Image 1 (cartoon, rainbow, N blue to C red):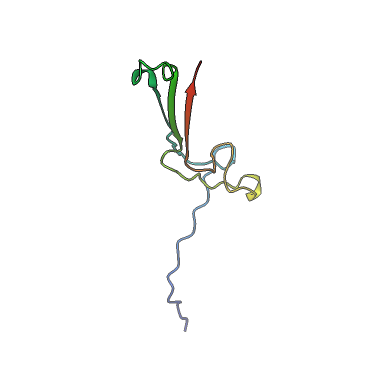
Image 2: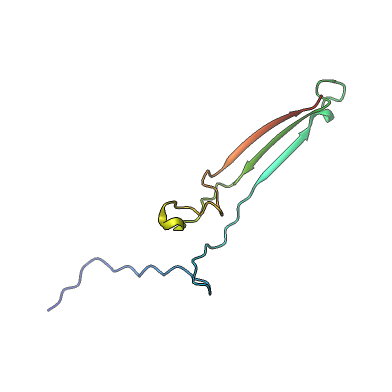
Length: 99
């Protein structure tokens, strides 16, 4: 008489996809970057100080997509640093002035 465990068995984890050269590859992933630059001479055309000033803001990886797991370098790093950035979302600002 055999007894079955009350815990349901999980299906096996599928093996990673391999291409014809027998190398592992990452799936598709899309990152969105944004950049906006505004020239302040349109706002204050009479001001000599703002005539050559521009304000710029932007973001890298705007939607904060996490990089895919990679077993590159025998698992020493969880991310393929040649394909993804581990920082996540990065927002920056810049003020340009010319004189």
